[in-house]
Image (tube, rainbow, N blue to C red):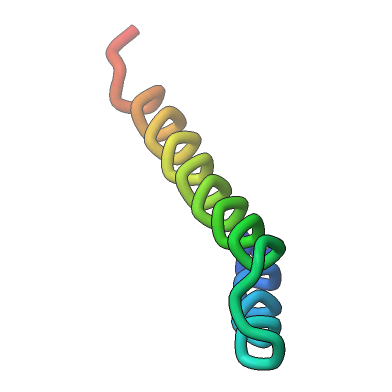
Length: 53
């Protein structure tokens, strides 16, 4: 999560300085996929504790 937050904040600075380009779009996609991966992992781990043995 920390890496995603750092990339997201730096992407915001990049957009403010240089505008939108292919690099900033790639960073945005990576941040979104990272967040999606975090949610999937969290849901999977949470489901393991709820499953009866």
